[in-house]
Amino acid sequence: MSALVSARPVAWSRRLVRGALVLLAVGFLALFLLLPLATVFVEAFRQGAAIYLTSIRQHESLAAIRLTLLVAAIAVPLNLVFGVMAAWAITRFDFRGKALLGAFIDLPFSVSPVISGLVYVLLFGAQGWFGPWLDAHGVRIIFAVPGLVLATIFITLPFVARELIPLMQSQGSEEEEAARVLGASGWQMFFRVTLPNIRWALLYGVLLCNARAMGEFGAVSVVSGHIRGLTTTMPLEVEMRYNEYDFAGAFAVASLLALLALMTMALKTLLEWRYGNEIAAHAPGGH
Amino acid sequence: MKKLPVLLALVATLVTATTAARDVTVLNVSYDPTRELYRDVNAAFAAQWKARHGDNVTIQMSHGGSGKQARSVVDGLSADVVTLALAWDIDAIADHGLLAKDWQQRLPQNSSPYTSTIVFLVRKGNPKGIKDWPDLIKPGVQVITPNPKTSGGARWTFLAAWGYALKQPGGNEAKARAFTQELFKHMPVLDAGARGATNTFAQRGVGDVLLAWENEALLARQELGKDAFEVVVPSVTILAEPPVAVVDGNADKHGTRAIAEAYLKFLYSPQGQAIEAGHFYRPRSPDVAQQFAAQFPRVNTFTIKDVFGTWRQVQAKFFADGAIFDQIGPGN
Image 1 (cartoon, chains in turn purple, yellow):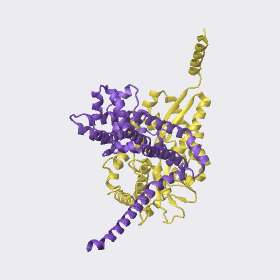
Image 2 (spheres, one colour; image 1 turned 30 degrees about the vertical axis):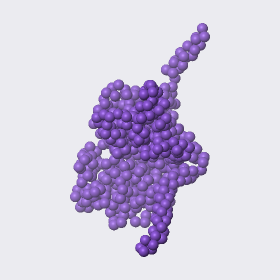
Image 3 (tube, rainbow over the protein chains, first blue to last red; image 1 turned 120 degrees about the vertical axis):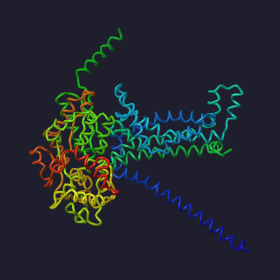
């Protein structure tokens, strides 16, 4: 009897819960993501498209854009190579300290970016461990482009490896072993078997890595020295302009950063939509 | 034969490159509110240098909280000149051997080409009726100023408050300490730099009164609305002397000493003084001061020497780790 009575209310309350949850999620997203994002573009164009274009065409903005692209162009490929190597080592070999290596890859996620920037100052700064030697040899790392690149590499180190490791673990090494048995060399096996298997996850990782490399603020702020037009990346340029009462300029540069993020997201969505089956097939727990 | 013209062209380029204009860059590491000031100073100085010597001078700028900037120079930010908020920050650089310890005697007037002071910026109509220091610690008044640990302006503010309390009838160290401690209880946030605090007060609308550099308060009023804010001058405040110096170690390494010294002297020239006054820094030159008299309210000031001694002593007594600010500042 109780079953008969409660059947309808359960279905009704289920629908209520579902509706409430969806509404909450959408509202949360709108409040914390869409609204700020919209603000960036509204503020950027508040004084008109002409001011927007002038702000972006200024020497300092262009220098910041160039520097940001340069830093990402060095940091992302390096982390791509490192990520593949690390994922390979962890998923295909057994060795002492494997768990430790895995933990170390996650370190940049758990350490505050400010700390990671400070560590480089302590290592390479004039008062740091290697400071006097670097100074004697005329090498500048901190408060120059190499420092920005180092800090960005550190911050974005986990992205590629963390995308690859679960996938490569779930795939196992049977296909690769088959390739070796059939006479493929190590490189042939990598390029013909491994790489095609991991390509979408790899691309994913690279996209995330790139987004973070361009957007990182804390760590690069510590090692930048904030020399206008020389060591300021786009996020630093945004802060600098905001501090100079140039709100239109700050939001104009910020809108470019937001645009880069949106493009990354669009590319990611496009990949999922276009190659959804393939990604799903290779995703952890898929098949 | 074909190579000859190319070779000649190459030689010609080399010759002109050595005789004609050099491109020189000088890095000026400065504190937070001087962004607009040095943009104009740099343009004027570069034009003057080009006219007199033919070189193309680019002055690069780095801005931030004064203490943080000094730390960066110590850590290797290779400033040819530093233009900071207070003498102790340059002393700290001198302690690491980058410039002579007597640097402050090298230029006139304690190496401070311009001065400023600490004033109050309140919202239009002064709704809380803030006229002088005691009004800041009335119930319900929220005070905005940056963190004295990182901001030079905030250290001047701290000393201005302390000096005020000390100078009252029956004033003594204990009363000054109690007043300053009470003042910090009225501060809901402490930004790292002067500009951050100004934005907190003016843009985000937090607090009833901003304790700021006079130049920063007047600039904020000009940039963000003359109708929105009013400047209140307290009965007594401190004369802030932001100093400048060539960083010997770096300038000599870069071969920029001559330009760096000329750049700092330019700050004392009539042209430089007028630019500084135009950006609301009080000029040292009586003539220029006369010319800009209308924009600077009359203030009754004391100097750091009158009340506290040297910046080195002030730093040790008030702002070093575990010193008075740590004992009575936020969280105590």
